[in-house]
Picture 1 (tube, rainbow, N blue to C red):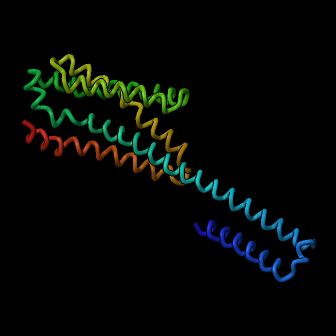
Picture 2: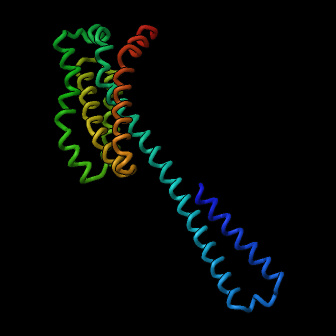
Length: 219
């Protein structure tokens, strides 16, 4: 903003100076000095125009990177929410599926099995295909898994839904790191990574006591 104001002030000053010189001495329009002044004015106008163009581009980039970060960080928030949600739903799951403690452990653990197995392949796929395609495919898989888990008529359907959720959210963190490295500078990367981890842990916190409270008030 300061540089923008300085360029605008310089352009206006040169314009007013040229008008004043012209009316004080009309013959100056044919002199070498007049041409030099006109050249300075045109150069200043060009710099000002280009600066406005680059300023608009920078504003667009800044807004885009925060929109992208917010969308993917929301997915990371939900990945932690799904990770710890079965603990708050344990009694409801035992009642609904007549599940034993072993079955309940398998239901909670199948998320981690796929999540763990896909970490290394996720890095390779994100480098090879880019985070956008990977996030779209994984988001669809996690969404289908969430719906399947929520409406599961049997324990096997719930297990399949939970596995799809683990499969889908396993790519979010690596993809988000890749996006942060692209959209944010090296000086901002550590701060954005810290914010990412914070949002993920907020998802885990929200699936504990808040989720348990919501279950008690929903008939």
